[in-house]
Image: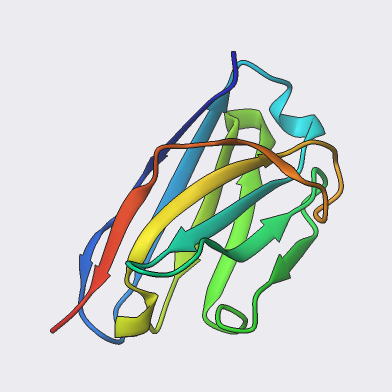
Length: 120
């Protein structure tokens, strides 16, 4: 079955950086779009960035210019490089698998999440 495992979360200072990873298994990773989402306490889950099967990236306004989504299909792994972190980036970050190659496709599987906390 589909399995998505996130890692790389932790505590960072404002202005700092973190790199999240998501390893996928149980499906043809290279054939599907992937995405990073986040959910802060008391808020709905929101998209951070999406990447198509071929690597075309799309970003939420909050992430554009600071975060970079990428994927290594040979390693079945997706990444999120987060720079210039802000306290409002604090959230549980989830990896999601799209149901097609398209970045705008619906997410049909989720990982368990990795916590990112930005605080001085």
